Structure formats: C-alpha cells, structure tokens
Length: 305
Image 1 (cartoon, rainbow, N blue to C red):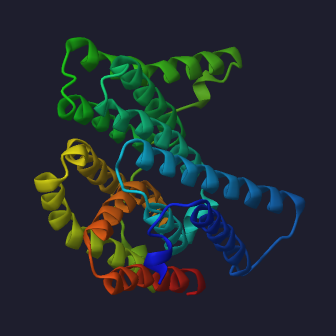
Image 2 (image 1 turned 45 degrees about the vertical axis):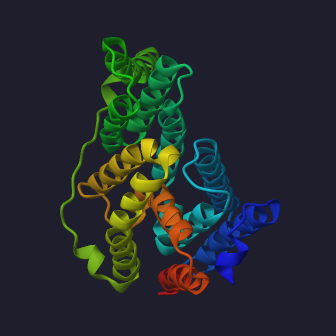
C-alpha cells in the first residue's frame, strides 16, 4: 500500500512528504522530557522545519534533474524516515546548514554528466564544499567527489584538475577577509576534533536504526550496482560517483566528534538514492511494502524509545 502510493511523484505525494516531516518535528518536540515553550523555542523549530523542507526540495531537484531515480517519491519518503530514525539531526543546526550547502555542491557535481559549463560546475561545487567545510570541517572529505566526477565523466584536463582547488580556497579567503575586518581573525580555527568511541551506538535508540540502515546498504549495494551497470546506460555513468559519495559519507561518520546519530545525516542522500534504485528493480509489491514498513517501524521506535 505505502509503496503503491509513493510509486509516482505527484503534487499529492510531495504534499504528503511535507506533512510527514512536519509531523516528525511535532512528535520530536513532545517526546522531549523538558519543553520550554518560549518564542525562541518556536523560532528554532520553525527554522529546523524550513531547513528540512529545503533539504527535501534540493534532494528532489538533484535526483529528478540528473536522472538518478525514476518518477517516484521513494527518495523523499526515505529521507523523512531516515530523519525520524535519527531524530538528533533535528537539534543540530550546524550539521543541517552544512548539509544544505553540500546538497548545492552535489547538484553541480552530478550535473557534470552533461557537456555544458563543466568549469563553472567544478568551481561551484568546490566553492560550496569550502563553505560547508567552514561550518563543519570534516566536510572537506567531500572534495573527493569533484575529482571522481572528473574521472568518471571524462573531464580530465589540467585546468579542470586545478579549478576545484581554487573553488575550495575562495570561501576561506572571503571569510578570512571578513574576520580581519572585524579584527577577529585570531578567533577562528579549523576544529578537526575526532571521536573514535562508539559506545553510544550500543543503545537501542541508535542500534536498531543503525543496524537496519547499514544492513540494507550492504545487502542492496552489490545487486543494484550490477543491475545498473549491465542495463541502465544513462545512470551507470553517475553510479560510480554515487558509490564514491556513499563511501565518503561513511568515512565522515567515523571520526565525527559527536556520536549521537546526527552524524548520519551525510549518509541520507546517497543511501536514499541507492535504496530507491533497489526498490525500482524489485517487482514484488509486497516486498516493497515490507521494506518500507521496516523503516517506518524503526522510525517510530527511534522517536519514542
């Protein structure tokens, strides 16, 4: 039933997605032990809701514009379920902001599959990655993606190799100039704090969604990749970049200084695209429903546990 409803991308499904993300915010508020219903509190929640809706709109634009999925809403549904499975994402403004900027970078990276304006796209994507790195330093690892795209989309020239470096350092130069004008240049430093203690993942609140998410990634990545490479000539050109994207997202999680589940935000987009392509391959409707209902159940457990 749920798979059949989201099998087509329509205004109704998009509206439903926005209702669901609003419901996730609403439920997360009242599942908190102590609630301070102040004006600032509502402003913060409204800002979070706006960030998440912008995130969903960007995901929809990237996947549809670049042919990463077919005409369905599975990717948006999965994004909402992932957010509900890791509700600590909602309270991390820095990560949400960095993720939105990264989505702007991903939009340019995946569009490199076309021959139009490759140099501008390389500069733009690395520029956005630079901004995200200022917000959350470990985002610098995503600089691997422009070069993966250069290799995969056959854009290998000396100029194209150098452009991402220029794009990356440009926001740092602008930000440094801004701090110097305010005489606060000495106050900023790149904080590459690491945390390799994973004991927080032993709690059921994180263990259940984490096991489900990583388990399904391992289960579907190989058959989906083989199917796309052998049949889908349009998508297989971008699939290598998506696979690298997935790997980099996992690598960012490992040293993340805060281990409360919010660090998995970077994994949501490539995983949603992976799972959506897998669901598109599955012919049994009942299996699609079971697949999605498992994530619905994990989301409910994560919010109320």
